[in-house]
Length: 112
Length: 115
Image (cartoon, rainbow over all chains, first blue to last red; front, side, top):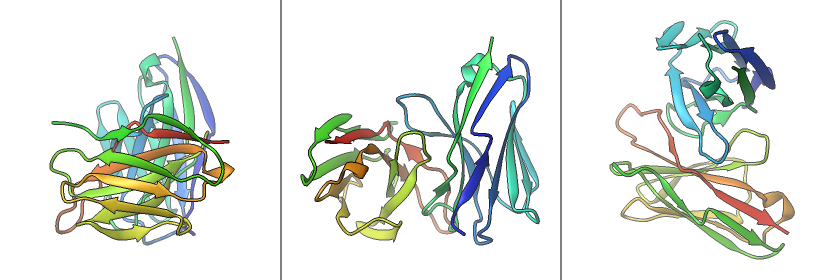
């Protein structure tokens, strides 16, 4: 019940395309859902986050869509760029900042 | 503003040994969390410290222990190292206020190899 499932495991997108990564959870106590971006040799960095009281949040080219009833959320990267090539992790926290549960990650490659 | 810094960046130990990893929190942050990231996997929560006390713990045995100091820096100690402890250990700091806050700021990690 503490797991966060993430798909796909890897994703290849052409420059300018849309990248979509999906996550699902079971624990209804989760109340904060961030996405992290990690480059090789670096720690994860917060990309965008959402609370369950909204269904969508957009920041620049990045959008989170949240479906509370289905317990699913997704990251959309519009106009994907080669610089977006990284590993993306969805996560969930039951206490708005404590003991995050991370998904297994999606390795995104954006071809020039 | 100084980010989260961790040391050492890489280290190699043998099975049964003990290791101490160190972390300096981002300026102004009062909470530090430690995560273990095995190769090709997402980070796994080890524990969190707030006001120098453990404030939550993941599914890790007692040989994983930690400290938070008055200046909000932190240590992760692992005793009786096992081969499966080989991983990237990530420290993350955050500012917890009334009502909570969500953003974790991660360091670049300490890569531990156990032989």
